[in-house]
Length: 67
Image (cartoon, rainbow, N blue to C red; front, top):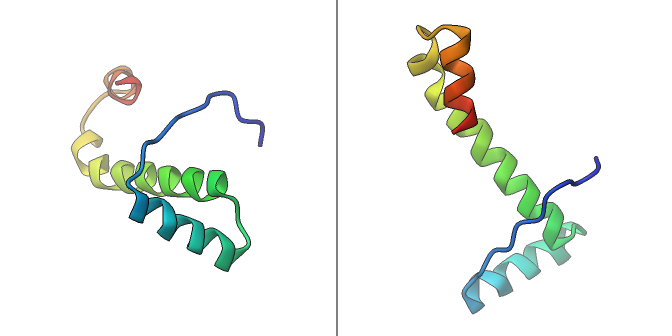
């Protein structure tokens, strides 16, 4: 996967330390964990929104996705 965009996230000290522990314990990078969390969040939202979007036409669905 070739990343095309960069996102900066500000974390509290405790959050950063917890993330570092997870990264070390799973042998993953902080960036990998961030991408995984974002992808999981997006997937969950798409599943939650699916019933709401089921009745929309393709054009409306595309407009909603772009927002």
